[in-house]
Length: 324
Picture 1 (cartoon, rainbow, N blue to C red):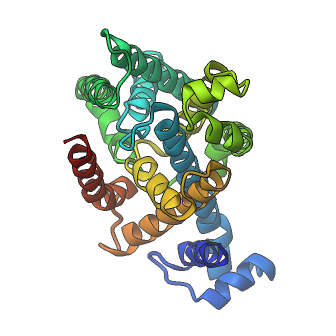
Picture 2 (cartoon, rainbow, N blue to C red):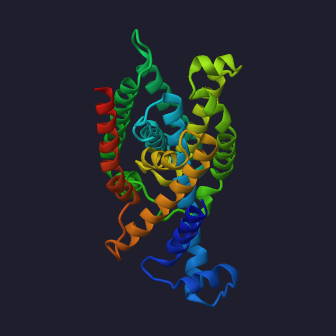
Picture 3 (cartoon, rainbow, N blue to C red):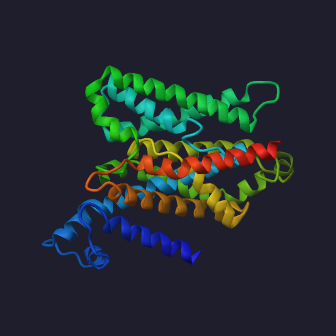
C-alpha cells in the first residue's frame, strides 16, 4: 500500500513538472512550499499545473470508484460509466442544453450532467431488465452499448447543426483536463467528496451484497436500498466528471480490475484503492498526452482509450471463455 501511495505522489509531482515548459522537481517543490511570485516557473506551477493536477486526480478517482460500484451492483466485469452509456448521457444533455437552451454556466452544466447520467443509467437498467430472465450481464452490456451509441449520435448531430459550437467543444468531446480551472471544479467538488465518502462507508454492505441476494437479505440487509444508494453515487461521480472534463473512457473499466487483483473481493479496501489507482492512471495519461506530440497536446481521452481498449478485449474474451 505504501508503494501505491508513493506512486501517487510521484504522479502528482510529474504532472506539475512536465509539459511545454519542463520544470525540475526541486523547483516544483519550492513553488508549492516556498512560493516566489517573481519566478516564472513558480507562477506556472501555482496558476496552471496545480489546478490541472487537482482536476485530473478528482476525475480519475471519481470514474474509477463509479466503475467499481457499477461492476459490483450489476455483477458484470465489463460495467463502466462509459460502456453503460452514463458518460454519453451526461455529455448529450450538456451539449443539448448549450445548443438549444443557451446554458453557459458551470453550475448549470453540473446539474445537467447529473441529470443526463441519471437518465442514461435508468434507461440501461430498464432495457437490460426486459424479458423473462430479468437482468443479465450480457443484456446490460448490449443495452449500455445501444444507449451510448444513441446519445453519441444525437450529440454529433447537434454539433453538425451548429458548426461554430462544434469547433469550441470538439476537444472537450474527446475528454481533456486542459484549459479547466478551479471555477469548474469547485461547484462539483462537494458532491464528489460526499459521494466518495459514502462509497467508502458502503464497503461492508457491498461485501455482504456480493455474497448473494438471499444471504444478504437473511442478514437483514435492505439490498434495494444499497443498490439505490450505489446508483446515486455513480450518477454524481460520473455526471460530475463529464461536466468538468468531457468524455474520458475506460478508467472506470480498467482500474477496478487492478484494485480487485490486489484486494480481492474486499470492497472496504477495494473502493479506496480503486480511487487511488484511478487518480494515478489519469495523472500519468495526462502527462503522456502533454509530451507525446509536444508542443501540441493530445486529448487525454485518447490516451485512456489506448490503454483501455486492449484491456476491454481481454476482459471480454475472458468472460466469453468462462461462459463457454
